[in-house]
Image (cartoon, rainbow, N blue to C red; front, side, top):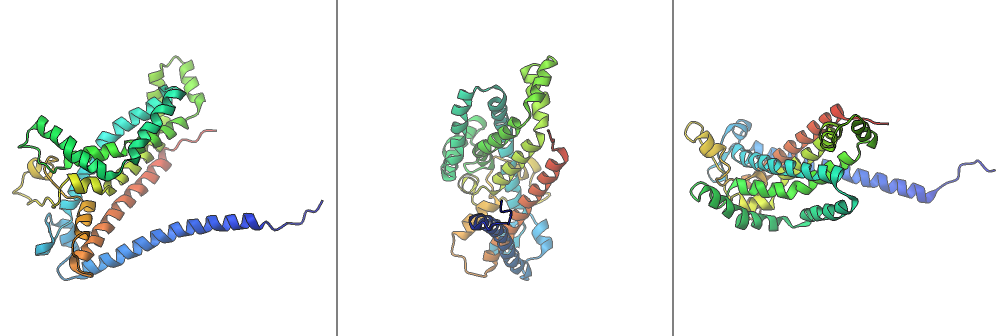
Amino acid sequence: MDLTRRSRPIEAAIQGSLFLAGMISILTTIGIVVVLGREALLFFQTKEVTLGEFFSSTTWEPQILEFGIWPLVRSTLMVSLIAILVAVPLGLAAAIYLSEYASDRARGLLKPVLEVLAGIPTVVYGYFALTFVTPILRSLLGVSLVEIFNVASAGIVVGILIIPLVSSMSEDALHAVPLSLREAAHGLGATKLEVSLRVVLPAALSGITAAVVVSVSRAIGETMVVAIAAGAAPRNWNLGKDGLFSTVLNPFISGETMTGHIVRISGGDLSYNSIDYNSVFAIGLMLFLMTLSLNMLSRRFVARFREVYE
């Protein structure tokens, strides 16, 4: 028997291709960071902008050279928070049903239907928010309270948009919990609901947390829905003059998110290397840092609460 090592060119080619694919992903990420950082640095090097003003001012009006990021961050966070309040309960409930209660036939029918939601173009969701959700909110709460363009409608529809993401990833995490845990709990007399909520759900907590964080990142980065339904101007406010609940935390008034602002500004006649042009990259870098922080937090949480079964 010849034990000499034979060359395997096809296997080596496949290994090289996989390594190349990984390197392309890493280099693409590095390239994005470099471009964002370089252009954002040009923005902060102009005499009209300071880091202190960028992170402390509550006014974003490039026409008068006011560049406070908080009005854009405020709308972005409010849309994301409302979206999570909609998506997590519904998505998690759907995941528990699919994992613990649904028959194979029901799962085979319902899961593709849920995933159809993820395939609908986001521009359709945007007009759904504007022409369906907003009129409902105005009829329920009053036209004087709910503006035509408002953060609440955009947040609700972004929440509907990310339900498939929450449910699919959470269902995978629940499904990965060993059957022996369920059988042991049933053997001790636990009901199906008790097994689902007190055994399976805690065991899958790390996976569910990862699903929620990925969904938050998706909500923060959503563009078309907020560009159509939330508003096309930053909601500036003046500390001490504007009310906390009437303006700053009011979801029923218009507001422009970071992604919505980037889309609107980029669609205009921006001259290259102008301060408006460079401000887009500063906002993009801020978005990147927000999602990066969420992902790092998620990794720490998953590592802390991850359960390993044999």
